[in-house]
Length: 423
Image 1 (cartoon, rainbow, N blue to C red):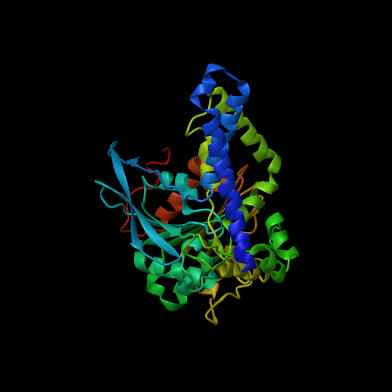
Image 2: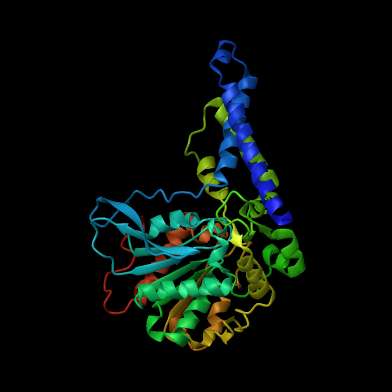
């Protein structure tokens, strides 16, 4: 009950600040006040507008916002997001491009479950759509999942990926971004053991902690400093009465957001102060750079407690993937069993979350895979976000990934790779 009260307190704090922002905006915008212009009222309205939007975004799942894509025929085609596999904890969605012939390359993009929605990969999706038949894992907010649906830990997550790969078939190319990289590697190994015919053709791992101890960062050091008991006591709460998942134990998104912001408090504080000034001067817009970034950054989701705790314990503390000791339902998943799936790793030279060395460790684990099916790339000057979004991704990494996919697509897929690389 105490943990539930804490969850509700955080929601109350968020809701109150949203209300204060809306109230300040409404009061300062009262028509009568325009008779006596006052800079203080302009600042108050601007503060209210920014504050209301900030705290309102924290409980909203962003829309993909991808209306059209320009295809090789030079025309804009409508994009429809369709659910092809419906799960209690996550769906497999397909970006269906209307009026376009089916693309030869079928790609599964595995989105992180690390506090943000899959829409964090929006720009990645936009860049891949012209060249691929694209599918994405769309994980659900744990606060909206009833307790009756049961648990969801890293073994369940891995089995979800196995089911998604089986559904898409053996001609699939998988790209895993950040957090899911080690579990996607495990899911591929699981298929190699249990259902070899369902294995994907290639696997690209981008900035994931395959071996967190290879190059320690603040993130991995945190996992080693705290005990599991400390984490469970300080980070885990029960969903409050407002949501469908009432009573479910979770690692709250609001709590993680507070941690994110505290790491760069000065920078975030300055960003919001500057935005208030721009709004007061009439220089801001609904989709300016600040709002585009923070509308996504502030939209957070809860993770199930068991997923968060088993991730820290088994991936970061015990390094089960790095040591090839990962098990599912008591059965060892041997990464060495991967013998036909081409594997590529991508790292950013300036990545301070999953530093260079952590992801490339996957190649050493694939002992049954010939060197001809292994590849790696370290992007100079790129940070964690830059290896799957921004100029580094668009101009350098994306073409390399598409070439890797094409090289491992088999004779049936003869379409040249990268015909839209400059898009």
